[in-house]
Image (cartoon, rainbow, N blue to C red; front, side, top):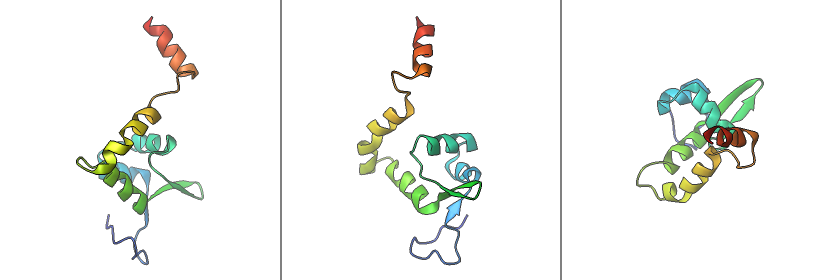
Length: 99
């Protein structure tokens, strides 16, 4: 996939399929959909298809780059977004099974 400068979007791909994003990040397509669902990876809908704007993908990667200032700022938000709310039915079932 050829990613050009943000300002030069004419004639360039400006969005990618979740499967392509997964390939770029070395994660599954399902994990990409999960990141979209929990709001960590912005997406757009084109008809019945979901696409991830390359600009947003670049921001996602930059924010999580080791040594980047944004990693420390968003680490808590990432952990909170991944964990179910304490009052959710899923959380209650998990806690009940543990004992």
